[in-house]
Image (cartoon, rainbow, N blue to C red):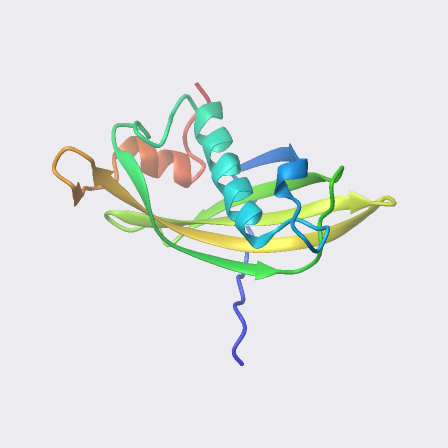
Length: 149
């Protein structure tokens, strides 16, 4: 079976957030569930945008919609863990881009990989229900050339 492999760019991450594992993130296996990983990725993306003065409905003059997602599970996370999510951008095109998320936690002073994720994001006009072009401001943010607001 072919496995999902996500390669992180050699560049410095665009943003880092920390998110504590909540009891609602825990499943019957007593670890973070696969559905919770997607929710954590969404929260990390929202925090990244908010840190730059944006939302998914106004990301430097455009809106965003998720086109696809990939998750490679690397280890277990448990209630009480604090997850560190490093966010990178790549494959920046005319209407879409990928965000990569490296999720880890510290356990006994050692970093443990939890998941590697990718969300394919598209610029989207919710009034016309069609994709739209990436704005110069969003491109600058994704390439690390934007100043924090």
